Image (cartoon, rainbow, N blue to C red; front, side, top):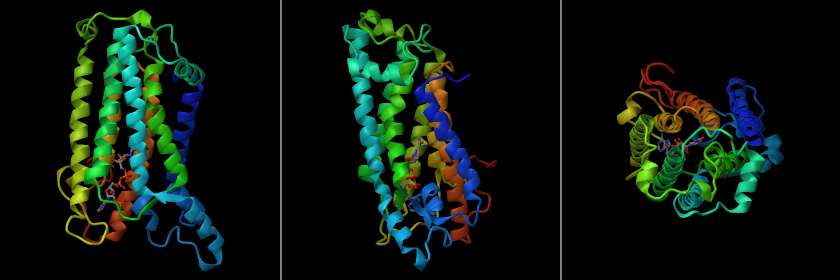
Amino acid sequence: MFPQNILSYCWMVFIFVFCTMFILYRIPTLPNFLWNLISYGKVRNVSGRGKPSKKQTWQSKLDKVLDVPKRWFIHFYIVSVICNSFLLFNLISVVFYNGEMPGWYLDVLRFLTNYPLQNPKASQLSIIIVIALLLIQGVRRLYECLVISSYSNSTIHISHYILGLLFYAFAGINVVAEGPELTGKVQMDSVRQLAEQLEWFHVAGILMFLWATYHHHVAHKIFAGLRTGHKDRSHRIPHGDWFELVSSPHYLAEILIYASLIIVLGFQHSMIYLVFFFTLANQVFASISVHEWYRQKFDNYPKGRKAIIPWLL
Ligand SMILES: NC(=O)c1ccc[n+]([C@@H]2O[C@H](COP(=O)([O-])OP(=O)(O)OC[C@H]3O[C@@H](n4cnc5c(N)ncnc54)[C@H](OP(=O)(O)O)[C@@H]3O)[C@@H](O)[C@H]2O)c1
């Protein structure tokens, strides 16, 4: 069902790794270095886990070297904005101005994926819309990191950081890999000609993207509001909007955002399913660990609230 190429094998490995984390997380005697590898952010400080004993000072030093500040998330969105702006600019140049994709980019595309496909799985319009949506997502998150979010000193393992950079750098390559060939042969005369490719699923996917984006943004505003007017950077119980239903509405919204891209691509595009399953695996894992962390930390945590799927999980 899934394509055979280097990029898709990488996705499958990472999806497998995140599924393995569900099992590792349940092991109470997990060695500290593994706990630090699989946990991140506020969850790392859960009831003594990940704190090395005094005898293990060499290990605590190593752990510190391998940690980076969680506020470095901003680098992901800088990478995303650069890569997707480059891609969108070149796609428009190819489609309307007889332009060519840079040779090195096509080499990377051929090396990592099955590009070019004999029967492309998405139209030019689908590809352009999805890259534009990825760009919008990157710009919004960059804005939130710069202007809205308020970070504590929490950390992430460097492997999460590197994986995040790769994720945002390669997300767009997955999309164009199964689209039409990126040569001047596809040149169109006008936006109207491109608009003739419009289908119901483009409209449905964009509406879902906007709906999920709105709630994603609201969740980050609520988080930031919890620290407004407080000198300390401690964590509190969030309330409002989807927080009334789940502990991590921003992770739920992220999953919906990637689901909306599957819809815009007309359900035919196989690489986007891998990107979606990667997001699903890591966001569900993160939400479960966050949910348990809240319940352990706050005695008055709302009982009916689920981790990520309202009323279910
Ligand atoms: N597509 C993917 O594969 C993927 C993977 C990972 C993340 N993401 C996305 O990236 C975004 C950020 O993820 P994240 O894991 O960094 O989210 P997060 O841990 O919930 O943190 C988001 C922000 O809210 C603050 N915060 C969190 N809980 C708080 C609380 N109880 N009280 C006060 N402030 C709180 C955090 O501060 P601290 O500095 O204290 O943490 C941080 O500034 C999310 O929207 C997520 O969907 C996507």
